[in-house]
Image (tube, rainbow, N blue to C red; front, top):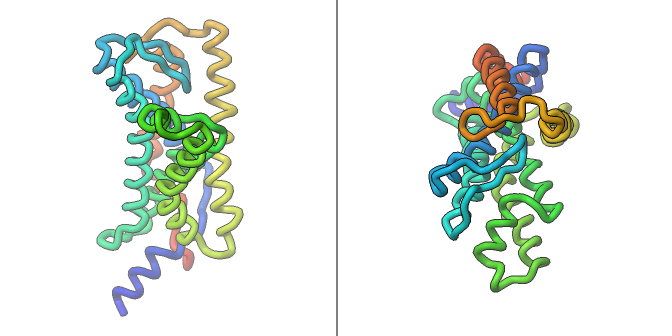
Length: 243
């Protein structure tokens, strides 16, 4: 009976959005976006010995060669590791406290799994680039595109299914859809369009630390501070349904 009760508590949650935990989630979203890019550029720096140019969502290398594909792999690998860390926390039967599972839920959606699927659907993204590198001599573009979609969806599906099941049925459709789509849309509007527009206009576009423009450094620092201050609020994004 005790085990069944624990499993029930660990799997039935309702959304509990407040100004504080929404702010914490937005900070997590922006920090995860930047860490994805840093994973690319730091590995590129290790391989090349110098920093390539970048903005808020595109990056380049200062060298060429077969090893540069590792820099491409680093970004999605980091993102999938965070998504599956969230999956583990949300599914953890050894510590199924509501706060831990809420953090897991936030990590999954804060890493924007829909962004991985969407870019593959649009014929873009790191995953398709990597498949072209390894299989481009054997498969045509259409088959590589289809394979990228299947691969990315297969990777993202288990954590997303777990998130779907974790929300009470009354909130499931709108809650899951909102967390799946809105972070990606918000990130595109604010970071990829808005902040990149400032960078392109020359605002703080000088090279700062770790090969990033100063505007990227300051933006990242701002949200790291916000996340550090508000981290505990991620424990309340979802709460047990009976509360």
